[in-house]
Image (cartoon, rainbow, N blue to C red):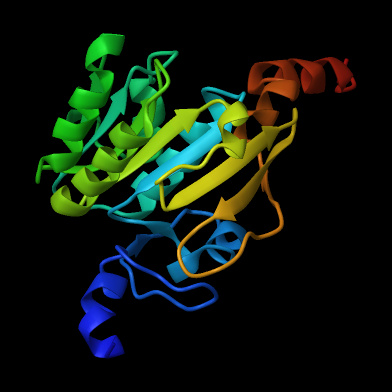
Length: 227
C-alpha cells in the first residue's frame, strides 16, 4: 500500500509505526527534560494521556499547570472530580486565567459520558480528570476518539495497578513521588519505545523551608544589638 495514502492518519496521530517520528501537534510540558523524551517534544495536544500514580493531586497538578501555562488559546480548561479543590490564587500565580477554568464534580455513573462531551466540545482545550470508577476499554477508546474530534487534550489520573493492563490511550506515563521530586516514566507513546524516568523537582519542597516571616525573625534575633 502506498504510504502517502496513510500519511493523513499518521499526521493526525491515529496511526503510527514503531521507532518513527510523528508529526502531531503537541504542547510544551513546561519541563525541558520531559519534552526531550516525548514524541514531538511535548504532550500530544489532541489525545488521551493516562497518568498512573498514587499521588492523586500534587504531581498531576504540577504537570498540568506547567503545560497549561506554556500553551494558551481562547478555549477553556477543566478539572473534573479533583480530590482537592484547585486554588484560584495558585492559578493566578501560574498566570492562568481562573475565569477560563472550570471545576466540575460529576457522579461516577456519568463520569465517562461527561468526559466524552467535554472532549468533543470545540471550546475545550485541555482537561485534567480523576477516574472515579474503572473505565472500560470501550469507554477509553471513545474518549480518545472524542479528543481527536474535538481537538482536546485529556489527562486522566488512574491508579498504577492499571499499568499491566492494555489501554487504547496513545500516551501512558507512570509517576512516582518523593518529598523533593517526582519521577515520570513514559512507557507508551506514538512512534517510539519506552523511555527512562525523568526527575522533576517538586514545587512542594518549599514547604520544608522556613517561611519568610520565620527567616526574618531569625535574622533579627541573630543581629547584634547596637546598644
